[in-house]
Amino acid sequence: MRRKAKIIVYTGIFVLVFLAAALARVYLLGSAPERLVKSLGQDLTGTVFRDQNYENENGNRYDLYIPAELDRMQDQNLILYIHGGSFNSGSKADGETWCRYYAAQGYITASVDYTLQMHGKDASIYQMNKEIENAVRAIRQRTEELGYHIAGMAPFGVSAGGTLAMNLAYSGNSAIPVRFVFQVAAPTYFEPSEWPLLMKVDKLTSAHDFCRMMTGKELEDYTQEIRKISPAGIVKDDSVPSLIAYGRIDHCVPVNQKYYLMGAYILHNVPYDYIEFPKSNHGMYNDPDKLQEFLEKSLEYAERYFTD
Image (cartoon, rainbow, N blue to C red; front, side, top):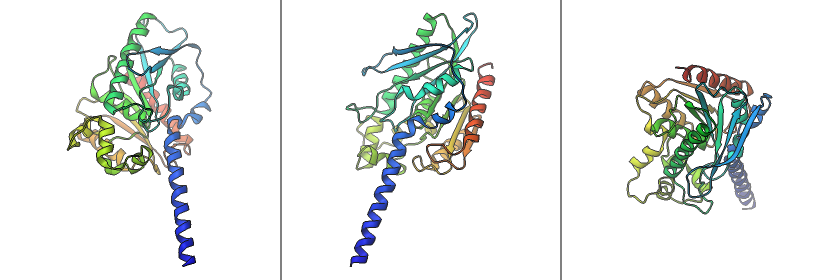
């Protein structure tokens, strides 16, 4: 009996430690892999306009990064960073390193806050999508006031932010034309059976509760609504080129998620590139060579699709 009790105790401890580690990865994913980008030594010479307002009910704002000596007589392009954090954590501050990196390449950049779940607010993916759209509209207006015309943009996000970046890109609802989208480790389809970890994080006990939280709707059948909030469900024949990256041993975003997305790209003949981080989990920390490849490929996309 004592041996059996010890086994039960040790098993319980192992499960708790594993779950705690997994949850820690979920909460930290908003900044991944920011530290590696910092090591590249790129920095911005220009102006940062912080805490700019856009239309939303919860006081969310965005930061705008303008490189020095941009020609106001020429069309410019925007890279919009959308932070991760399981839709319930993270902030626009997570995007500063990324924004400075791409601004140093000559692009106007911005990082946006949006309403989060479990912060005393009822935030569905629909609401987040709408807030991102409103932020883009405000960025267009603000840059016009500063004398710049933005001809195109590319949304970019990490994890949950990548989901919102793709939703903006594939929905066709952006006030600035989207030329391409790129993302790291993003959820692509919200079938509740694939998200037990996210349900634990959000303290949800049923698939129905999960679907209600993600859609903001009370329904008997959520099949169509889940498709509408999922990037892999809204890819179309005219969807923009897409650059995606995933860790091979990601314990937070199920492995099937990237295949749903790539299957949609193939079905609709959407140009895409997939970069796998073979040694990395959701944090994407263990493959600096692949991060370098991802960054270089994103700049290739910018060079190609911003000038088409």
